Amino acid sequence: MTLDRFVVVPAAYVFLLRPGTAGTEVLLQRRGDVPFMAGHWGAGAAGHVERGETAFDAATREAVEEIGVTDVDLTFLTSMQRTAGGEPIDERVDFFFTARAWSGEPRIMESAKATDLGWFPLSALPEPTVPHEAMVLGLLARDAVPPYLTFGF
Image (cartoon, one colour):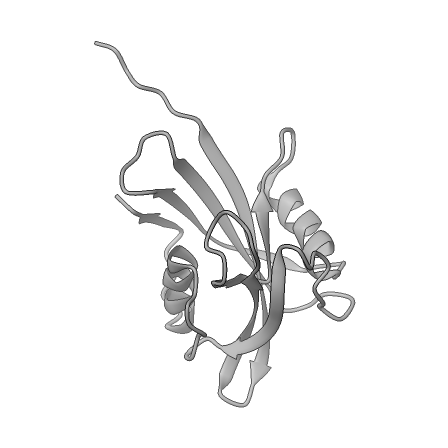
């Protein structure tokens, strides 16, 4: 029996959270002219885990690179195994973190990759939001995030 093996692409996501008048707010960025989900709203900071890097370290690095914040007090939220329409060559494992404390004022650091940055109530996400991230944020709004999720299977 021959097994088709695939390469798993790991990514780390950071959802900065703060109290708001309509409940907890999350910082989202609108993706610019990028290959994946251009024009969609997604995590304030996110990106691939580099070789030799932990997901935690990648989340910390992405927060600095994408929104200019340091000392991010990360809390692991969940992991997600994800595929695009069952295509075995596009298997992903995403690690989601939240943070309620950090240093610095979030701002767009990579203007070629992001066109806007804003705070939104978890109960009223902007449209369009990256679908797999919207799933996690919806569960977070209900305080019902399990430790492991799947998407696209």
